[in-house]
Image (tube, rainbow, N blue to C red):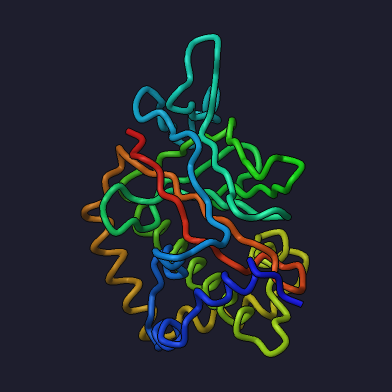
Length: 259
């Protein structure tokens, strides 16, 4: 039986929203599953400590890992602190995904990558629960700088994966019986293990001709204008569905700019 929190999250997926996101060629932005802005008492995420905006160096892949993680805004010499978030009005397991987005509005996937502990494909994923106080701190975030000539290629890969993940999540939320879809199924390791059926199906959907054309157009526009000297952190929380898969997306939190 669904809990009050689960019902409230499920209600964020309205019929009109479903019609929008199922339209051929639709490219979702990262905040497509938004929470109601008034009279809402369900789970939500907030940033406890913003990243420090200046003084942290982005590094090229040839330079190796960064020396120390991206500090938090309150970090001082001899007393380090780091970006952190908290889940409110919810007690239970949750998955937090951190990615990089642009400083411009609306926030879109950035070509730079997060590296460090728990990072894969440019994003960092951690799991939390009541034993962590429903908070997550990120002491090992590094930012890997891509060259300007690589921006288009990286962005194309990001958009295809974003569309695939989005399609899989919507399929899970709308599937009969709410069987769910584990976000880990899109990882390179999962594909290497041989279970490629759902990914291949979603990938084919994501790169349909009309969608592919729109993605290429967006990539062309972004790579001309993307600020490679500034990023923002995007924190996204996923709660488990009845099947235990992390498919219930909360509204993301976007940090201040990091220069």
